[in-house]
Image (cartoon, rainbow, N blue to C red):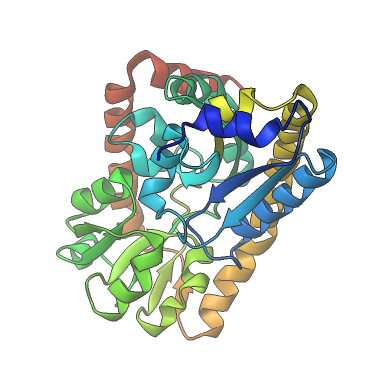
Length: 322
């Protein structure tokens, strides 16, 4: 028998007119030890406390409840009440979701925060149209390039099998002459070990999580962008909460955003040091590779603005005016 989300909410919050504890499922794509997941757990613990136990959020780490690519739809349909997702992975349905992954637009933590604030009104509007409410987002460290060989020229990238995690990274690969394959975080280690891919663009955090030094040799700190994991809630579920619990949820979301960003900043250099200490060659890209990447960035910024129209222009204008 199917039970609608609204009916389930009503059943769980009212028993003979008496409010009882509400339990929400929160699927996330990353391991329990990842700082995003740890931050989500702190958020969940804080919500339980400030709601006086009226709302308990259960974290399901590592894609154990829904895989990464399923999380957004699960929340949208009410199969889970709240979730965390790298929204840029859904740029194929709306290019606004890739606002945080336009190459070389925002290349520092401060710039990433400015871009987040500039995008928030439009991102909230897009999510609202899909019955979701934006809560908070936390950046990954700046993205670097990983290879299983030294890369000194643009030609060295041609034909390399590249792990893409969204349309943006796939496009970077295409423009660089590499061959992209979409691979979710939960499947990355196997893909590297079996040679399905031998390069990627990702943060130092991902490299450490997956012990990529077992399969790769070089990390280039190109600081391409700082993608963000976004936490959102099913709007029906949110609006069914008592007002005091809604306030608790949004207040703790703001704290989680600040806390998670500080954690990302603190960890960023340590991740790169860990890669080096495990034998990877770590450094800046050569001038030739940098020139090629900047060319790619210019092309992709123009392409993103073409697909996002007035909404994309409004985000860029707001970002540059701050």
